[in-house]
Image 1: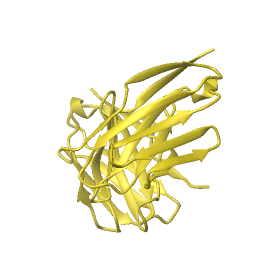
Image 2: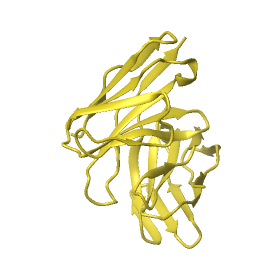
Image 3: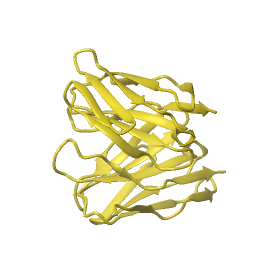
Length: 109
Length: 114
């Protein structure tokens, strides 16, 4: 079966750096997405990786290793507004998105 | 600005009622999706559509049906609502071309079936 694993919850301090990991086992691979979802709101797109390596976008970076079935989202200079759930999703061989359950990130002052 | 709208943010229905959830996108996207989101389970695909009048079952289609009569509108129908359909329902759309295009989500409808 297809599976996406990410930690349920993480806590970090304002101004610090946090890394949210995602491991996947899917039938085929056509890219990995990270979304941010604030409580009670819709998910919004953060990043897309299809080739191995690091993609940087401001304070957020996303890394992919296809051989290891592994990705991480790196958030730098954490702000209180970064408190949200972070969803990892993989596009499989049928181009359908398989979603992880999400990681709830709590930022403390 | 990209926009996906859903007909209601909150909805309370009784068991056995027929429920309609409407989704409209203004981006001329070919693909539209209906998901439900439950704590600890992630997003689960109910149905999707890649063209007008076309529909495909997702992972959990039982108890649901859909309608896409116009490109911009995708409706989810609960034929006879049950308490286990209490959930957050999210609609999304994306362009057809390319694998890198993300899905754009509506604000969600929190449905409670009593």
